[in-house]
Amino acid sequence: MVSGWQALFTKRADERFPAEITRVIAEPHRYGEPDAMPTLAMLLDAAVITSHRLDASTIHDLVALSFNTLLLAGVNEGFDGHRQFFDSALQLIDLLEHRGHATTMLLLSAARFEARIDNGGARRRQFIERALSAAKDPGERLTALLTVAKFHTDISEYRKALAVLSECRRLSDNPLTEAAVDIETTTGVCYYYTDVDLAHRHFSDAVAMGGPLAERGDPCQPMATALHYLGRIASDKGQHQAALDHYVAGNNLAEGQLSGKGYFHQRLAEVLLRCGQVDEAEHHLVQAEATFARVGQVSIPLAILNGTWARLFVRTERYDDAERVLLTGLSISRRHGGPRAELMLRAELLTLRIKQGRWRDVLLLALRCLDLFIRTELAGAEGNPVKQILAQLRWATTTIGSAFRRKPRREADSQVTCPCGADHQPLTRERRR
Image 1: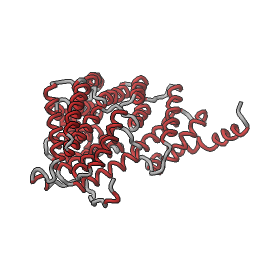
Image 2 (image 1 turned 90 degrees about the vertical axis):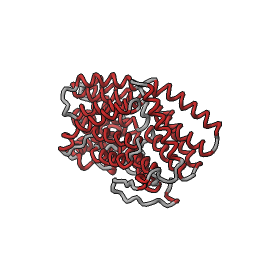
Image 3 (image 1 turned 135 degrees about the vertical axis):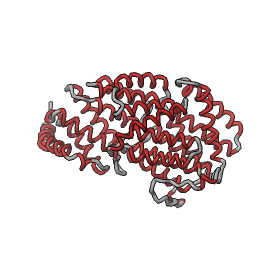
Image 4 (image 1 turned 180 degrees about the horizontal axis):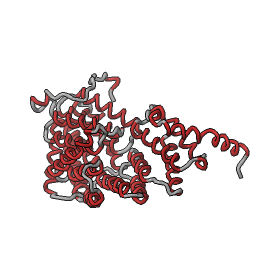
């Protein structure tokens, strides 16, 4: 039985919120910044209460706007409503599903939101699988399948990812679409960890395919991702200026997902550290940390960032700080199912132990790295295992070697300049992490 005050509350909510929700979704440009998140979170709660007064399209647009604002703009410091926000959004998605309305894109947004909490977790997988089941047309099915492939790649199941991508190719009959570029890019990501030359060809093809789309001036996230990985390949080859240029070019094409922005700053810092530009690298690490905080990131990207912080601390002989962030990062990577991140962090810890002269620990860590690599990266790979092993050895050699160089290895490295356009002011000791 509904009490008198509950009935009065519902009546007042019915009088106020449907009109306010309609007004907000009619002006989405006014609600795309972090300071809009408290309002959007409140309206999601209100939509749950007054859903009987709202049509399905209105509910759909409110949930979509709320996810977009959070994922693209983030929140201001002090916002603590992530859990309630997500609970309300999921209740509304369930309601839309019950009404027979489209939910695939909303469920994929929910999966992106979940990735910031648990990138390789079962709940994220469930959202993606629900999105695939809910697809109402070939376009939605293709988008959902691409997300399935990316999930498999995130947890080092490359063979499964490539099988899903084969189905994506059957559904994509137009090479001049963002989906076609995404298929090429995602295929490249699968091979990046197993056959870097083949990956390079796929990324280059993706950039060529995305050119006509980018010329229209629209964001093209798959092309941005391809440029990002071409930057990583250039960095692995010691072509540091080319790497930085690729990262910045990709960032200029990106759709603006905050997690992507955080990775952008982290990768710039990684290259700058290899060139011995510690202050410039630290500037970008601070930017990456702030960007991840705005979206509430606590999963694998944060573990990877900790690895780069550790590299900086080792370079500046702050070994206690390096160990602290590495152990935190390892805990995150294990908890959130990130074998690649765990492997990278173990390699960084190996570097630290070499610096400290703890040779027994070095041997044990090397054996654990080998075991993890065989159980995850090699077991899930498609292609030539010898090439994959050689690629990992080159990466490990570069990572460990860079930690022992106080000066740039080559004259060209000392001439590298960051093209991001920021004023890389050195941080005072008080402002440092």
